[in-house]
Image 1 (tube, rainbow, N blue to C red):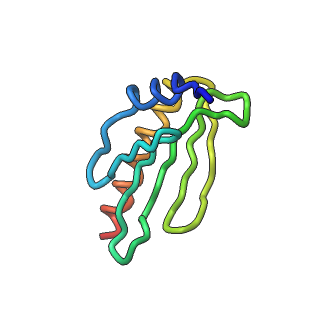
Image 2: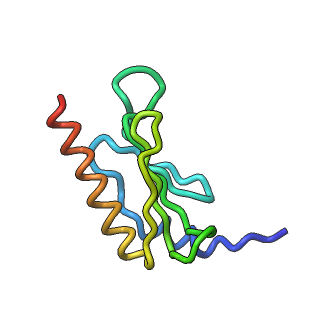
Length: 100
């Protein structure tokens, strides 16, 4: 059984390095950005980026805060998704700085 790694490989190459305390994990089917939490094994935030195989969009971004799903956005092209992801990564860092 062969798989088409084209869409995920292009995303892996195009997505930014994680800013600040964010960590990036590429698992072959999605790219996750995780912001470690202060207590326990839970992350403070997680953004998962993957090709949108279930819809008509090119890329989807799933958001998690703590252990709660907070939303999904779909983007028509990778450039829009990268812009949205970059803004979200920095916005979460700024909010975490304000809370500390």
